[in-house]
Image (cartoon, rainbow over all chains, first blue to last red; front, side, top):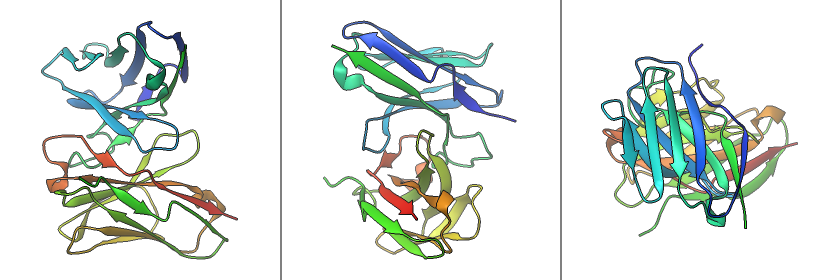
Length: 116
Length: 115
């Protein structure tokens, strides 16, 4: 079935390193993706989004890359800090028959651990 | 500016009981979505309320029902609780059913334990 998911369940990096979190999707009609971060004991927090008419979008210390050919997107975090330790989810609003952006289908998530 | 607030933060129920969870959206938002997050999993969409009507629904049984009030706040009701209903229930708010953006604002959730 259609899905959106992540390649690795955990990622461990040293403070100051760059982190790359990957996400594969299966719905070729998907044209909008969102990344969320969830810290322990908190609800998910929006990080950045990207539409299919873009290959790359940059935010503050984060960059999302979209490769529509292989249906893959990645979240890159520059100079990773301990405060970046969290679970990261990619989400697809159109997967599962969503008709608006309020219905998001989340993958399992990647746990990012940043060591000082 | 108050963000999304949920209550209660934690609760324990027994099988067969009923539970009501409450959510107040972020100021200026008129749409509320509910998600269930089991331990170690991503959030799963339950339903969305806009203009006091259920607009979209995920793959959840009728035991899960909701309501939205004129002030945009919302309730999630779960009847005949099962052990498998134990989870973190997240409320997310947005403006105009999230049109144009996938940026939802989540509360910190209500942790339900069913014994």
